[in-house]
Length: 457
Image (tube, rainbow, N blue to C red; front, side, top):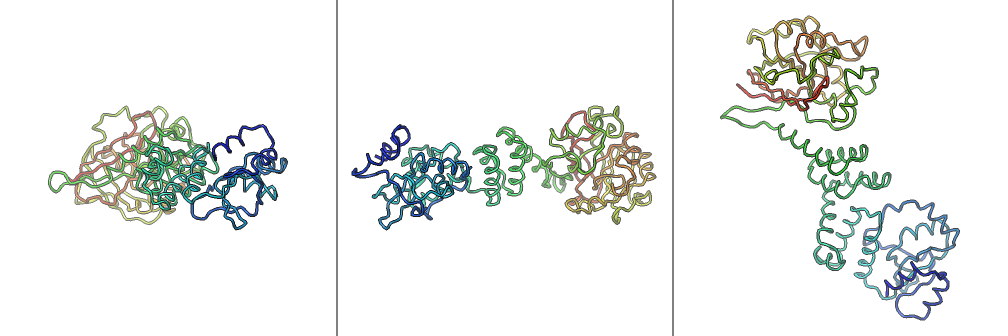
């Protein structure tokens, strides 16, 4: 009967008042006008949070004086009616100032039937929210003491339909809250399968970051899946592994940051786009915050790129030089000289200032820097690569006369000494190391993200 009444309401061309007369005297569900202030919503099952544009709907209802499609209620016998479905129309009617609205009224409707009808009505909405559906299924399970398999049978749904949504409730509450905020602002940008992919990410902070990435860049499900795979692959390299007895392998690089600009200093403009290719860096998810290697093209448009070097350029004996300096203090030749080891041709130098500890702090941008004399001294040693645990071997921006004032870059790169920036030295051994600098993108850019691996000799 319920379905018959609803179908008549949706498709009949007769006015509501004519239908009211038709329904009088019938047993079971009937359409009558009920006072708006006498309709209450149940507190024991989830209700729709995002009601959409109520103002426009309220204007329509005010001009007509009634809802176009009746809501459905259950008569409590105490002068009030419990809402079964039609919350959006009810709230719009209140906003429009209507005193009464048309409703399908049922006198005999059990809690179980009420809950099932409410659920079925919401399942037929075009703008279904999978999180709201999940909450409803979970509440039905608890209230009706049914399994999800039994609920699926009752509702005529595939079991997977229910499980695919209920599992979303395992997302961190902050992630769910952020999703609902995004959904209310931009419909259909983040869907069910986006959310299911986020379940594979255990760190809720990364879930939030990826969720924002989906909304800002309108990532497809395929693009999100690839991004998560890249992050997982990068993180697998961040844990020291035992190899060959007491030897260890260390990852001295940071995971790739996927959060927008390729420029560490977004407030600075005027970079030469032909040299830096910032737009390409953005497309490749490259940021200057990552551990990366600067190449000769960084200082000269015709300079060498990654493809100009054989792979053995990125492998060599590593020398760790510990330097203790205050903020924005120069690193001089005497700081680099040490009687306990000698720097030889084709070595890879790691200058550990300890500044990696401040990477998430403003102090990171007040790092120590190499003097030009120290850069010349390193270049004469004919080392392969200089690795810094700072954002640059040159002076911090606040000490430069111009943004492009980078004499240390010029000295080293012109002598074919490559520069790795943003190294993480937390687990590094003081003994001689084997260093492996693995470029992540073989492309003609001025800087390339790298994984820097070290093994004890």
